Length: 179
Ligand SMILES: [Zn+2]
Image 1 (cartoon, rainbow, N blue to C red):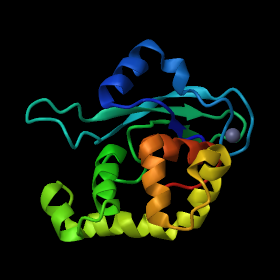
Image 2: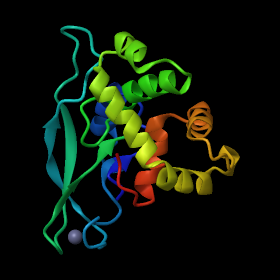
Image 3: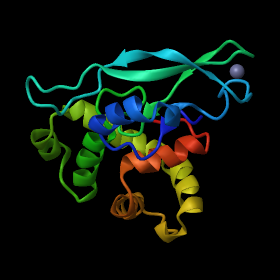
């Protein structure tokens, strides 16, 4: 869907890009009808900073919006550090998932992380549910990820090679719905 602008690793970077290179966010075509040349159309505000210290939160983060003259639909573009439809950024999700992949129990991971046990369990199930689809697309881009049938081995290899945010940006570019 190209909802995600890759390689924007932090909210700081996002705010900098938005001020200095706003054109980078403009999709090359409308995700609804495919025509090129969408217009900038303001922004919406999104809570995205779960990691900031008290008083230093970068929230709310402006997310640029675009308007298609042909189909009159609007679309927006997220920096890759923010996860669509999820409260916590990818980096927090990856940290919890990596601990589970390394064999830590859900209870232990929940003690070490800010998100609660139910949330982390939901992320884990999401990774399991989408394994065949996500691994198919990621392997076609990165053959070095290998052919292992083990989900644990696959995601461990994936996280050694790239961040969860980068992997999701690749899938998004492929038209895969995430998360
Ligand atoms: Zn359109």
